[in-house]
Image (cartoon, rainbow, N blue to C red; front, side, top):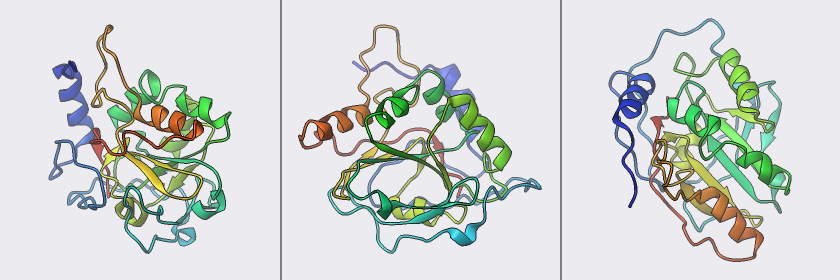
Length: 237
């Protein structure tokens, strides 16, 4: 049976990652787009990590089993990255917010610790996406660069400050994960693993949904778990 998330961590995490007016409960996955946050924090002077002019929004809505919407987004240095350029490779999308305690836990000792590096060595493309609006939590270039260094993220972090790509994929939480197969089909959407955003008990059996999906794709098998409920902070649209 799955263990409950420790209340002390949950209370602290929700307080740290939820802004006034935002829901704190986990959101369902799928094609439904996330609702924009209504409250904004004071806008830092350096709130634009990269120029938004390089961004190109998807024209379709993401749905598991259907072609993943194409997009072009700038990385932290302003270099445009286009999803279509990775056709023929397995791609993982990771919705990211360096200020979110759930993201921090996942990278420091949870389902994202070391997992991206393992799959990058096998030829998987891993892309992090920050869909926070300028001035919201975790959107400054300084915060993102520092987090990437701390977490050992050797893959690109893309900036979606208008939130078009996040909404097209229905990204509602950080981390919110998506797996795209070499044919360009979205084959998984949801949580990184079965811990529901918390820290597992020492004897708890944890299923890393992304790791499992990638293993099944490598073995030429269909992904057995296609959708799960994402847990974490709300995406700061």
